[in-house]
Amino acid sequence: MGGDDPDDSLPLRGGIDVALGSFDGEVLYSPALAGAYELESKNARYPRIIGSERFLAFLNSYAQIQDESLEGDYVRELSVAIREMFFEEKDTPCTLDFFGEGVRKQLPADDETRDVALKAWRFVCSGESRFRKAGNQHLHEKYAWLLEYMKPRLYLWGVKD
Image: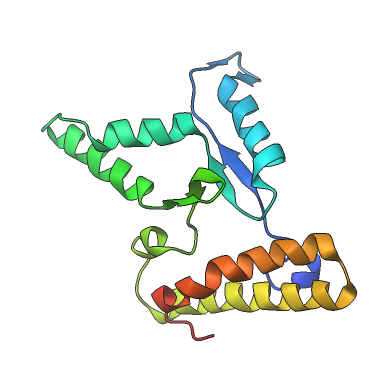
C-alpha cells in the first residue's frame, strides 16, 4: 500500500520468533506469535524487523549442522544465508538487514534491483524531509533512523546519495 505515494504509506516494523505450536483448523496457537508481537510492539520502535534470541539461536544451530547429506547441506546453506540477512544493532542482537549485503546477494545485479533500491532511498529521504518540516517529531525520528541505517549501505545497491 502506498508504494507509489509516500503520503499514503509508512515503513513497517515487526518481530520474528519461533516455537512449537498447534493449529485447530482456524487458529494457530504458539508462543512464537506472542513473542513476535511483543518484539514488534515493545522493541522495534523504528521501521525494522527484530528477531528473537530464540530465532537467532535456531538459525545459528542449523548453520552449524553436521549432516553431510544433500538435505543437511541445503539446511546449513539456507540457515547461513538467512543469518547473513541479520545484524547486531546497539539494542538488539538480531535485526533484519533489509538493505544490507545478505539481502543484496539474494537479488539479481541488474537495473531493476538498483531502481527499486533507489525508489526506497528516495521514499525515505522524502519522508524524513516531510516530517521534519511538518514538525512531526515522532515520525521524523523513524525516518531519521532509516536514513542513518540506509546511507552507508547505498553502495551495495549502486545508489548514489
